Length: 101
Image (cartoon, rainbow, N blue to C red):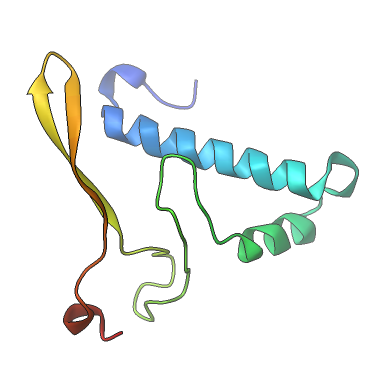
């Protein structure tokens, strides 16, 4: 087991699940016979999204101080009780005055 599910917050499992699906997509794109370190890196660098369970678009390197941050988007949900949620805002980006774009 990679981690102890009993002590891992549920939101981390969602993020990891999306990453696993994205890596699977990249490996299928490269093809079994062509998998190598360089081919997977090239596929990952060319991937712009959407990431499963993640942001609809990715732009790695857009923040010089944090090059591994690949998006500045978020969604908001309200908890309605009994494990039920409702979306209160779609994908939202910060204002241009904050990002400088």
